[in-house]
Picture 1 (cartoon, rainbow over the protein chains, first blue to last red):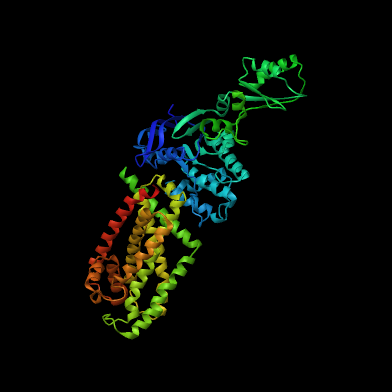
Picture 2 (tube, rainbow over the protein chains, first blue to last red):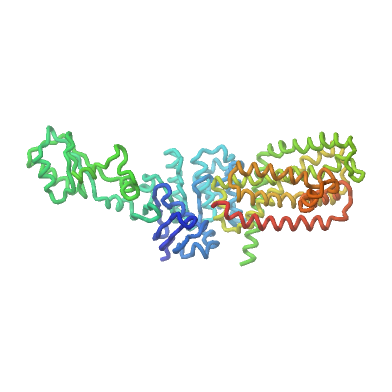
Amino acid sequence: MTAAIDVRGLFKLYNGKIRALDGVDLRVEATRVFAFLGPNGSGKTTLMRILTTQIRPTSGQASIFGLDAVRNGQEIRRIIGYVPQETSVWLDISGYENLLVYSKIYGVPAGMRQKRIQDALQSMGIEEMADRMVKSYSGGMVRRLEIACALLVGPKILFLDEPTIGLDPSARKAVWENLISFKKEYGTTVFFNTHYMDEADLYSDEIAIINKGSIVKSGTASELKQSLRSEIIQVYPDGRIDGQVLKSIRDLAFVRGAINNNSHLEIVVEDSETKLPLILDVLRNEGVSLKRICTAKPTLDDVFLKYAGAIRFKGKGEDPAEKALQA
Amino acid sequence: MINMALDDSIREMFAMIELEIRRLRHDRTEIYTRAVQPILWLGVFGTIMGRVNAIPTGGLPYIDYITPGVLLQSTIFVSVFYGLTIVWERETGILKRLLVAPTSIYATVIGRSIASGVRAVVQALIIFPVAILLGVKFIANPFYIAAAFLILFLVSGGFAAISILVASIMKTRERFMGLGQALIMPLFFASNALYPIDMMPSALQLFAVLNPLTYAVDAIRGLMISGELGNILVDVLAILVFDMVVFALASLSFRKILE
């Protein structure tokens, strides 16, 4: 089956020296929701602009449903929907008029226009606002209108560049809920760039992380999280823990690190669910009674910071897992 | 294939015109405020200078003489500042989106230019009745008047293309504003809008001959006021050549606007 997106050895140099993309390989299967993550300036938008035929790559190949992004630009533009990061509707006309003008620009046949417009409005849940001037819309409504405009062509693939940037949490949720129910109904492939890890986690089937122009990691959200292979078990004893206890924990083959953090022990393992009982056995044998146990699984934030971040850990500025490993 | 591309292009142009008409329907403030200046040119400058009788107008009242030029100036103002819309659309994501639509870039540029021409004609239609009230005597032939408006439309479209070209190069609002201002008045003064070319210093005369506004003023003055249509073919030809050159240049530069 032809991939929705197939990218091979893609390079993009700006002004002959700035390396925006440095050998990207990427495959996105049809009907998937694909999240593309990366820090600012990592090449996310450059890749999207090449895939949507706005700019040409310096070398390498990119194709959309088998159509070459350089040679078959015109054909690609007929099957994609694209929503740029910045506002892409006219503010001084109504939402309906935007849809009408875009349907004409996109060449939707006259007989199908009204139906397509109604469907797009309905898909994004903005029927009631259709006749209001876009100026009076909230940020979330503008974004839903922009996505509605992209749905007019009946796209096989939807490209969204930071679709929820600058929106409040409830507006973000509204955008995504409408998108996902549209996607379920029509099976459209969705490819989006984002900074919001929670969105990638919740709504994507697959994720790729790009850093400095190359893809550093890809997989499903749970694969990526598991790839860190460091879950932390925190054990709060009733009293102090002596060095002997710490040593016997560290002696366990599956323990990747452990530190005594005064009030509690931090133990790093690959999989806390199967290893916790074994650790409890050791603690019981050493005669330690426990007040509380908690486990922390890595989040997508941790994954992002590990593969693409210069800063090691959010919050206190250090990674307890890392520290525990060093101890 | 070529047929389909042509259909796409024509459709795109009409969509752009429709967009402009819809925007105008919602908000005409700009058209009204922009009408103030040309009305002052006619009502104040035209009336006072008319009393001096210093300019050979071929027997026409001075206010009648300058009406075509003032109408053109007002429409060209609209066109030249149309580029600001393009600059705004560049700052937002609209241009990116238009470039990703299945239409040619030429259709987008020409469509936008023509759309601006429509806006400009609406501007002229506001000033036209005011000129009648001020006592300007137009030739009472609806075909001549319609032809004059058609020429206004063609010239305005061309200047909108120049504006798009400038927007592609300048890219920011501030730089654009400066150049827009610097463009209009010299064009206006170095044309036959306010005085015959013969009265100018010879260097300026050369510039006036290359100035598309000169041909437009001559044609519109012939059609609306004087009835002298001896040069009309040359005038129309000059305007068409001007349009084609600037449409081509604007289309070529437009892809660069996003870089």
